Every structure is written in structure tokens, then in C-alpha cells.
Amino acid sequence: MIPRAHMEHFRNPRNKRPMSDASATGEVEGRRPGETLKLFLKIGEDGRVVDASFTNTGDRQSDASASALTVLVRGLTVPQLEKLDVVDIAQRLDSPDNPGVATPAYEILRSALAQLKGAPSPYQDEGRLICHCFHVRDGRIRSYVRERDLRTVEQVNRWTRACGGCRSCRPDIELILEQERDRVATTEPGA
Ligand code: FES
Image (tube, rainbow, N blue to C red; front, side, top):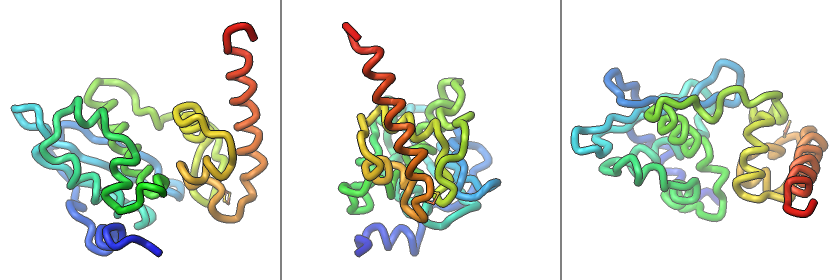
């Protein structure tokens, strides 16, 4: 069952509007080619977020987490934004055990923070499309596997939603997990 807070943000997304004077914009691909989810952050003179909004040209499923994020970040400083984790956003949707629901918001936040620093988005050039159902690319799966020490396809699905549909991408994800295990084994001291 979908938690009430999640349903509320889905039905009545907050701050779903473009922003012309944003200090930073974060952007990730949607589930289908050409679709984008964007975050706009306006940072005030005191270094805190004074306004946050989002636009979404794709799957409305991402609205809930982006909406919760725009409420969560108001008043925070950039160092505080950098400390936010995907679980913090999932918590706002009453879904701390289901972080995959918050990954779109987490990713637009990280993309916006990269832009603030003048760095490229961590979600650019992510390589081959692995999961066509959820539009998840090779690089995104590898980054979650490395950051969260994921070991199984089920864990990858929990964090990225990949393999949550037809499951035809399962062999590719198993191969990525195997390659990442080998990479760790060969880089460990004494290997
Ligand atoms: S291609 Fe990944 S679930 Fe369908």
C-alpha cells in the first residue's frame, strides 16, 4: 500500500513550476527518451535555499519525490544539502524502507549541487541503456552498486528501480554485479 504522505505529494505536487532566476538547475533523464525531470534552486544572500521548484515532462511517478524534495530543502545551506541522502527524501514520503521511490529527487539534487560547483552532472554520459522499462543506464547502476555496496539484483532494484518490470535486463545487471565484484577483488590490497 502506498503511504499517505507519498500519495499526497503525488496527487498535489508542491512547487511544480519552472523558475527563471534559479541559482542552480539539476536535471536527469526520465523513463522515456526526451523526458526530463528538473530541479530549480534559488539560494539567498544568507546562503540558504529561499525557493525550490521542479518540472517534469515524463512519468508522473517522479512528482512525489521531487515535490517532497522542494519542501525539504527550503532554508537549508549548501553543506546541509550535500549531506542529504536518498533515505532522507524517502522518509518524507513515509517510505524509508523503499528508497527507490526517492532516487529521482536525490539525483536531481546531486545534479544541481554539481552545477553549483561548476562540475558536470554525475548523471551525464551514463553509458548503455540497461533497463528499458525504467530507463536506467549502466553508469547509474554501477554508481549505486559502488556507493551502497549492492550485491544482488533485488538490491539494485530497490535503489534504482531497474529490473522492476519485464525483468529482461536481469542478465545484464547480474553481469554488472559480477564485474563490480571482480573490480573490487582486484583492487583490494594483496589481490
Ligand atoms: S528492461 Fe528492466 S525491467 Fe524491463
